Image 1 (cartoon, helix red, strand yellow):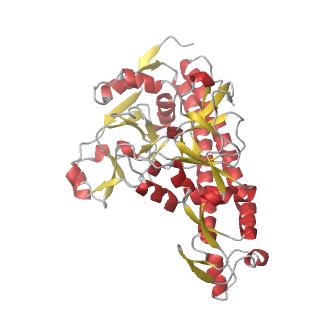
Image 2 (cartoon, rainbow, N blue to C red; image 1 turned 135 degrees about the vertical axis):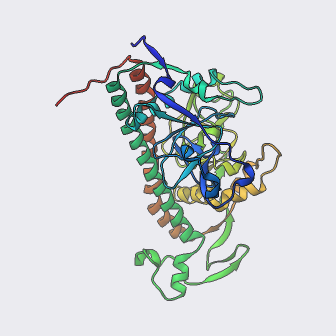
Image 3 (cartoon, rainbow, N blue to C red; image 1 turned 90 degrees about the vertical axis):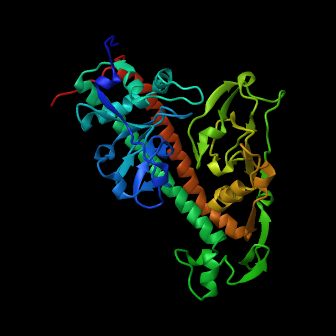
Length: 426
């Protein structure tokens, strides 16, 4: 193990952003990256604040470049890191640090590996200051001590990190596509009723075989939700699922629980699961999860804390902050998940949530979400089509988590010198 250390500032430049005036931000113009735009492991320009080009004169040194490593310098998320990918021009706002390798951009992968390894956030917190909220300066970031490694080792470690990160990113991008396909199919069949409209107009439903098309009616009837396909009715998710069907009790519980908290589930991705002895687990660790369950966060539902559960461990447990929907029949499984988590449902839950600082809904509000009740054969056919999509999402999530665990285990050992990279020459 290496006993030689250096400060991060000896390997990297740490630059703070520019203090743009809040009054200058608009909905149009050039993107300005703030702390809120850092979504580890990336930087999102969705809902980014913008500024007019004339306000950027003389500020070229704050323009971001592809691959820049950005770190939050203030607040509860101080130390969080994202990698900027240039889809459009963007500039760096105050309280966000850009960390770039001094030896050239080919070393940025190593710098990114260093600042995202487990434990680095604790070093950042140790160098932070502030009473109401944590603050870290560029000097504080640069002062963090790290093992001194040869340039060849830095490049090799950076290469390993990049391969793992790229594979994880690809799996997540694939999942986003699969989720979008499943949601689009649900919306087409059960919200927009495209197959029914096509048949009403004398057209064959697009992308649908004749046998499936025959399952849909060719006209509509009035309902409390407006026009719905003839023969279908309006119901709620309670008609298709049981709410919070199982909970661990003092007399009935496993020795350990694998716990999912609200903060660790978002957009059908479970970032981490924490193992606890049952007696030491948070008091909210009570909701028993089984394969096919849908979990939807009831506190600040607009945060989109939801997930589909596929082939879980027998002790997988959710916080009581989730509403658990368990389908009453296997064919209901994907319909329940997609109906509960479609954008319209999440927006409705966010709208009706109340409670001041912690707006929330009761679990029965989630199970009471209205939906159409299609013909049983339509529901069965949708299950056949959608089940492989969500199963593949779950499989990819498992692979991504395995790679993330490997990354978090491997990188600290490589960076510390406890594990050496062997470079073979041709």
